[in-house]
Image 1 (tube, rainbow, N blue to C red):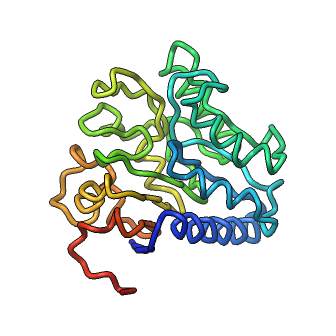
Image 2: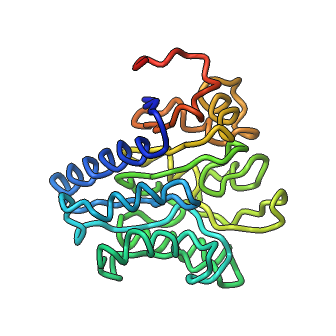
Length: 247
């Protein structure tokens, strides 16, 4: 695990975008394709805006998936897909065949999750129910409660050991979402967390340095895994006990 402690959210976006671009170039050089799991929420917006101007990436060789989605239509303001489409995919004029949206507006979220596994398997290999394919990069955020993707504290999907995606009921939000699960996230070749803001300082300290309790702080599940980079700004890192090596 590597923690990049940066000055502010703008520097986080810049450094993370550079790292994503490098991962993409390396994957395309080695395997002629780059598979990325996109994060939702508002935190990665500036990162996506930066990537949308990066001409060093062969975007025609990138396959876009999502780490989670709310149960809303594709054009809804709360849609993770919509945000990425507006700030990243449309400006790049990405071939729609490379864009693999989670159709979470359908009623049966468990069926949608299985269908999405089949779509991922079609592109990246494997078979639903078997070992997950190795995505080149899982891009993740973290909430103030320590959740990542839509793996919220004390929710059923945290215990999933076989499925790559799951319908996950989130009682704290009185809703259900579709989320990638740890069997998929833990097999990614690289995982980048992007975390900004003082509101997430306690959760970041718990995720990186707290007592082991991934039921309470789901993001902890990835802290001891090789290939995980955390891009965090100074406010988010303000409660970390470990000294800043760059200070």
